[in-house]
Amino acid sequence: MRIGAILLGAALASVASAQQGSPVPSAELGQIHCSATALAPLVRIEGTSELVGDIAITCENRGQGRGFEPRGFLVVDLAVSLSVGIANQSGFGLGADVTDAVLVVNEKACLASTSERLFSDCGANGTVQDPMLARRSSASPGLLLWSGIALPIPGAAIGSESARAVPLDDCGGRYGVPGGCHPTTTSVRLTNIRVNAAEAGVGGDARSGAIPIEAAVSMSSAGGSVVLEAGTLPVAHAAPGVSALARSVQEGRLCSEGEAFGEVRIFEGFASAFKAVAGLSTRPGRPGWTDDYYPSAAGEAAQPSPTRLKIGFSALPEGISIAAPVAPVCASEGEAAGLRLGLVQGASASGVGGTVVSDGLARDVPLTVSEADEAYAVYQVLAADPSAQEECRIQFRLNPSDSDGPAIRGGRVIVDASLAPLGPAASSGPLGAGPRFVAPERVPRPSFQVGECGTTLFFPFVTNQTTFDTAVVLVNTSADPLGTRYQPGSCSLTFHGAGLEGEQSPTVRRTVEIDAGEQVAFRLSSGNAARGVDPLPDFQGYLVAQCSFQYAHGFAFVTEQVGGASVLAQGYLAEVVSQSGESARTGPAP
Image (cartoon, rainbow, N blue to C red; front, side, top):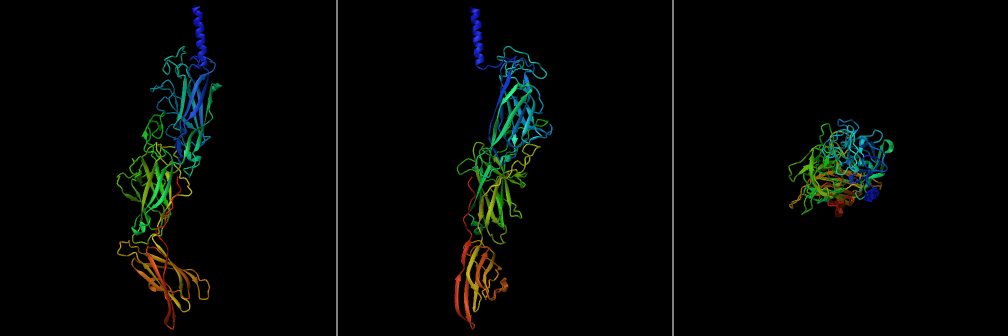
């Protein structure tokens, strides 16, 4: 009776164990069922080499056993097809198609050095193959391939290509050690996959939804021993990494004080979009922007590049110089500075090269203004909080480029803000060396107003017909005892009107130079040859005087003379149509 009870108890325990889904005994090979999941972090849609989330594959041994597998693993092939192009590094001495995308089995953390299957004892989990590098497919720009993977059979006796596995009746307490069994669940992690996120569509509006980047994972083996249950997985969501606003700050001071400021407000698109200097790592199992892995024959890691910001200015008014602050203060008053930026001197127009100004002084560095009235500044992210979405207000100083030259006519300066370096991702060389971003087309672009350092005067009636004549006086009153900045300049005179017979006369233009504190007078009948104003006989109409300095004033005096005597006279002040101080508009809110 006692023996029968023992046998009955063992049978019941076996049934209970089977109902609980316990692994197949180590001496048997069932069908391997695997499932895939993925992380989907936010990545910068402007980026051409963005790091997507890891793909995790978990495998279990199910079904009826089909005998003993003497190696303890199955040889499988794995492919990952992404919805955008692959941007992983390659060409570092291991073959032109070998990339730094890494496959890690059961979290074995050896140095990966080849795309071939290798076994070595490197510490943890030395009973499975080393991490394996992917090959880039020549058939598709978005396809990564791992061939000949040694997939450990969950719960099977441990073996290798050179050592036969010995079947065990009991693996208890002997999982993951030589002479024992593989864990009852096999894990495969695909990591350090980089993509050209810009192919998802560079968005210009930071308020638009993020665009998913997807991956299709497939796994195959001889005899169909492995089944992977995986559809299309989102591995990242691409969103704008930076946006900007612009506005004028005390723009009228450019005329009165010879200095003004244009403020560019930089917004981080999402937390961690701005990345500071990263660390070094030679462990392929833990890559990321803080620990980038870069394989080489010597197993050395490369120094990843921190994020840069390029701020471009176009349509700068003629005669303007612009200077950038070395170290803008990004923190609000009373708050700690999480985001710190440093001006890069000598950077190219794509944001490559140059050196960060390191003196830390609160000074401005003049920017080079091109013949196309364009300029740019490049900043490097020195520190950033990866858990917070940050912003920075950068004030660029504007000055007249020549104190003795003509005053500023004013205008609207267009601002472009983008991540840098700009250009396609580098397919070889150290990670981060070379451009990694594209500049998005944003409509409308942010801008700020540069106030016009000038005055427009309107004379509604001037005449030199029949017995009438008009005297005009223009005055530059920027010289006074009140401390006003002297503004020498010129007035462009435009006459619109008709001739003696009523015929429409062509528009007539003249230019006259007027120094600060000086005045110029002329008659329509005789002009002023010394100041370059020709007579306008038989003209009647109106006059517009556009002066390139503030505080211009005008006076007109109309007379009628009969027999050499004045019989009628009337004078009036010119109407001031426009002057500096126009309110500025800003770009759209992010």
